[in-house]
Length: 264
Image (cartoon, rainbow, N blue to C red; front, top):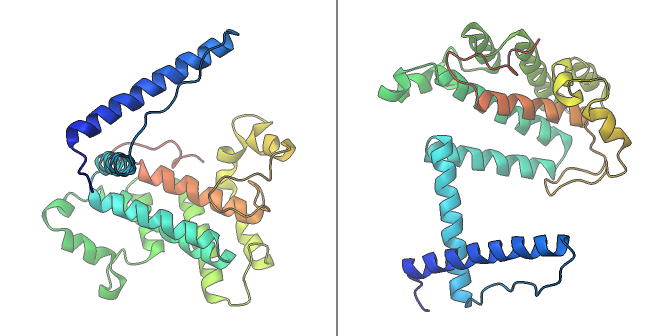
């Protein structure tokens, strides 16, 4: 097999850049009603295609590692994404357990950013979060409370975190519960009012009403969501709440009040 050199990969990058420019110019000509020959992609061997694809994936991976603050954080995000993709192909019970576990990991990371000792001796901090060593932050409820005490979250997020934990526990410990539409679960989901401002938007119309009116409301992306999923059904409300909290906790920073985490 022919080895593709770094110089050749750089040339291939230039060829792609030229193709992108040519495609933009072609689209502009078409918009003006002008005719023109459609730009053709460069001709590469199978080995060159594979080498360029591998190099691109490596660059994307390195960029994400840098953006997330290290390889460990990147691997955690990859593992979380894969766990959620698998859960969406399974029963509601899997979604409930995995989603809250992902939120819990982001909650822990948000708290750890307040502990400078993590850099000098991470084992000390790990013990604090380890339930097997009776760590003071070994359970979800204590992590929520310390996050509130440190000012990472406000009262609204604190309530939402405790409600999603309550829902997870119902799925985990009550075998008769297998759906988000179970009466015991819907009672808890009705408490998830914290997400309303994120779902409905700043005005009375909001995204929720637009979603309901849209003829494409049942079209989903490749995330694996079921056709019946909806922003406002029980499972949808739970998932959107978890996703919202997860993203907000991931971007929280010590000494800075995160607007979404402190929304009433």
